[in-house]
Figure 1 (cartoon, helix red, strand yellow):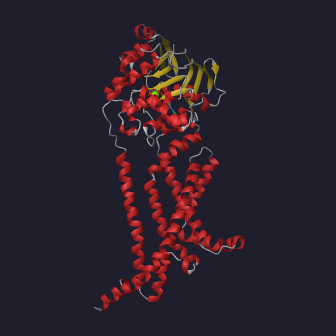
Figure 2 (tube, each protein chain N blue to C red; figure 1 turned 30 degrees about the vertical axis):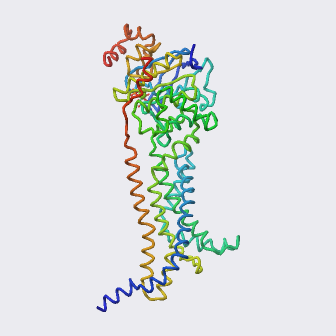
Figure 3 (cartoon, each protein chain N blue to C red; figure 1 turned 120 degrees about the horizontal axis):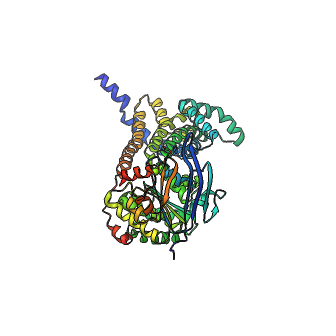
Length: 245
Length: 252
Ligand SMILES: Nc1ncnc2c1ncn2[C@@H]1O[C@H](COP(=O)(O)OP(=O)(O)OP(=O)(O)O)[C@@H](O)[C@H]1O
Ligand SMILES: [Mg+2]
């Protein structure tokens, strides 16, 4: 049984160009409900862009995106983004708000919860990531790892059906990576549908249900971690793995 | 000794200064503050509108903001005050019966301050990391709400020192209202002291006015420096060890 009201996510034949730079060239991706898909690939291969297209921070030139089997391209993009949580490499906490306000802002302003109710819910979320005692601190007084956990709490508070992580641990000092990965692992085990762009091969291998290897705007290989790590089919993936492992 | 006497009488005639001070404090100072503070507040509102137009995705709005800003930053204050104050004075009188030069002086000061403040706000808003807008939109905020709740407040915070500089400029520029003709009760600091100087034949009242201007502006200048310093040092993160990491490590 899932702790989350998660849903499946499907992207089909996604194309996107920035001017003449064709960044995504026909991406297909299916993330079944409650599973975790890792996305790996060299720098510039389009991983971050794919996440941003899938929650329509950037509109695709072509292709379709479906949440729970229903196309969402006709929906209001703001509504869609309320259903997909996103965590960034640079945390992007709001520095002019306290930690608890970072979490409660969207609850109050978007979910229209009364202030005290939003505050209470935000504290609950902070407790889940082990940071309730930092509720009234400012984000810049927290370590990177703590900031990222607040960012995760902020996204989770909106009760998303899917969570995106874009290199959530890449900006962290090595000793802080573990806490964030542990939290992501808990979410994955708890049944959240997740798309995780990462360089953490350990997480890919041990936590994710599927791994997708992207290069130059296309999906080169996709499958179970075992398939990709033990029996890479393409030279490109073999080259990439030998670089990162 | 004649020269020294002459010098002291011109600049430090204590009797003349003593006579002008009550008038400066009861008439000049309040009027100066009314002019400067109300144009500063209205200038901030106008500036915010110009800044939001200047960064909007609509090219027409951007163009209007650009042209406006270029015009009102490029003209001497004295010219704008005279053209607006004297030019629109009769029209305002016909329409509303108002003969007080304050509204038009405040309008002229606001139009100019708005142009500067608009540029200040715009640069502040644009200096906010674009990840802030992205994170807000990812949470489900629309563009307007994300700007209003997240980006603009941060942009404004960064430019508070520059805004105080604008207030200092307005305190000084408010003296230009004397060009529009004022009644005795409408005189601001400069005009009060200038009238006394003309009557007494000594410049000492102007020295007294100068001191009052400095009493207003020097603390503000130091406030700017203080805020500048706070803003720069406040950003230095006081990170702490990640002691709570262990609490959530159960899944790994
Ligand atoms: N806003 C943008 N405007 C123009 N080009 C962009 C933009 N964002 C990304 N690109 C380009 O798209 C390509 C893919 O970028 P993307 O950030 O998606 O790669 P990535 O796989 O996430 O790389 P990394 O591992 O370095 O984060 C790059 O060539 C990049 O320069
Ligand atoms: Mg990236």
